[in-house]
Image (cartoon, rainbow, N blue to C red; front, side):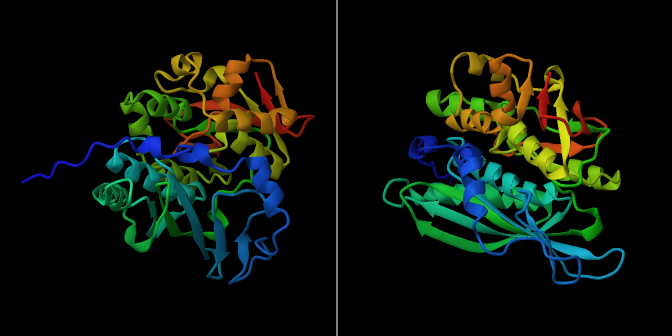
Length: 338
């Protein structure tokens, strides 16, 4: 006999939603700048080869010598409900966490759950559905999921800590982009705006759920196989925020062709109707001093929209995915939008 789960709008228990609830990038960088350690210190076995200097998606430590020496990639990602359906939220959060390893050009091997739950407010049966969603995504990714940590918390949160592997000389990094290279985006934008509309109205957007639960595995493997060396995933800091970090780290200027950027159905209409997350506007405020733009303000808001489990932004061409711009030698601004 099937047990009927209680109907609960999970998004109503969260002040933010998904990656839009991230700490603003400017504030985060100011805090991290004063922390000891965490910086890459060499290239030998046991050395941290990717640290926190350039805002990469994960940290990496070399564990083998030789031309095919491996690196361990470590990351963690969790957030408040981005959709009301518990199972979908679990799938989205897990795909988003695994994406950090894919964005580094690695393969996730092991994950553990991170769960916060208001036990006195939301039935714990729904927490089981969240965990089931996370487990199904890890199964699809071929990633072991075992154990984790849970706390009783006033606000529900879920995600994963993930460990993966990659070849040290094939990692996709923020500081490896070069002029004369195309920019490719592997998922359409608009997730933050559609999720904000879902939270406000209860409307369900299947196209957004489908995008957020699609793994970035195939795109990552294709980028590594093509010999590409720079990539990041587009999440809470929006396309412009993550692209700014890559351009700054690599010492290049990124030129975006706004007309080539793909968007999910309904995103522009939802922007017109005012469903813009506060995180998206904070993203735009952060990059604006570093931006030369000749497009309308609404277009910039879309480009800065805080994504959850977004696609990869790759320096190089990937067949089957749109080229949205190019990297050129560093100019007055690290970001240009035309």
